[in-house]
Length: 455
Image (cartoon, rainbow, N blue to C red):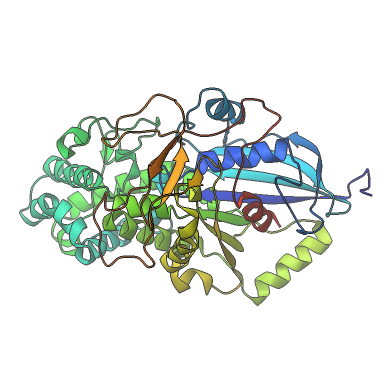
């Protein structure tokens, strides 16, 4: 029987990482709903044969520099309004404490951090100089033909010695063209999501430029190659000054919190990447590589000893990433016959570099934060699901209605050599979440994911 007193609190900070629209907010909302209303039979933690129970759950204050995640509003959106919650536009945190029946004499304090996916494009700035960031951007552009095509006007502008205003305008055109081409490597990310959380209107590159900033208002910058920096030191100095201010005010305030997490949940939206095309997949691989390089997760032998001593003597685990859960969300949009393929694509996407980091424990998961479809019989080889369709074939939002049977794409056995946006179609559906607050949504694999991240 669990003791009524606690001799230590085990703090765990968990960062949720992923591109915009990868399902971070929905995942966090469903996790919290299951913690609020925990039932071992529907959310199994610990030993599968004797799952843990939670008790004395309570919400605790968030850090002073964080914005509290509005769980109640997100839960209302899912259960009452039949819509997906609004996207993350700020650094959100949710903090709670509880006791687990399999953690004798211990209380768990979890701090979840949910950051805008757009900010991942700025990861290469963290801990780097303006010159290093610029050189990295130009190297990526040389390596990616799609990025080079989107940036052609900008590259021409710096080659012909145009002034600061024209260089900035040309760079913003490159960023707008990248967004129009379904690319996510848009840095400075405030061009996509400004500091007030405003997204751009329109889809054409010229429309995306209006009212957007490559940096902060009145403090914009663009990546200059080494030769141009040497030939035009005054322009390079201006851009460097603007870069340093942006890095301090935007990048560090958002991304530094990840470096102080104990675990990361990294969402790799395999379904979304297959739908968006090669460019989006290449961009996300690049951003994850940048993020891991600057966070430097894992620990050496000295780090392991330090952690063991700190936990034993001071009941404190040093704030450093030592566990990463890679998760493919929205698995309910995929026919059950293909779900093992999604896990294979997830592992292939991450590659060996992340899992071979010394002192970093990793695992791979497929999950659905809100199970909203069911498989249906179809013609031989056809993948049929049943759910409440969210959009029609032209992308127009449909009213909330009855569930219908519809086809979905077959997941390829391996990543294609190249594919265009729309080559794979996994239709969106409305969330199936009980209006009654005592019942969390049905889920797939979310309990195993949390159990790994919080241990």
